[in-house]
Length: 110
Length: 113
Image 1: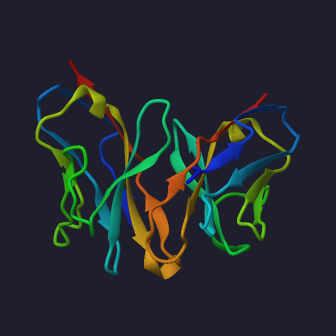
Image 2: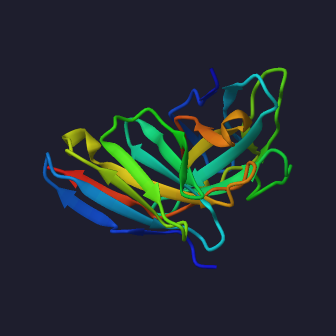
């Protein structure tokens, strides 16, 4: 069965430290993966998707098919990065329905 | 473009009652998905509508239903409310073809007492 796993419910790091939010998936086909972010009192919004290979707000994520992972990374965390982060997989077999991870709450300490 | 709008923003209901939530997608978007968000369960997929047809469905009881109109606006209905239905209900719209970005509304905060 298709599944997205975010093993950390909560991640707390100091400002300026590197950040890595883990995402593992299980999917038999070619995955399309996304990271969505929800800042406090704001709407859930797309942060980045693997096919665009962009760096958004300093975050990058590389699809590792061998390890079935799509970890989100940022070399130097900023306080404004504190938010809830969700990893999601688009399931082509079901009209691209998104399968969501449980989310990781990232707290950046000053 | 105007973003996704949801009405009402807040709602308080009593157990056993029913409720209808509304979602207006971004103009041109034909897909509307509904989610339940709670602190304990995170984001749970309810269902997705595309061109007035339910295209995908999550694992929720039949008390949860929805529909989509010809202008792509969507409604979600919950009958016989239970305390556990208290949550933030989010809708998201997308173009609906392919793995497109979903644009989320602000949500409707439902409290069941």
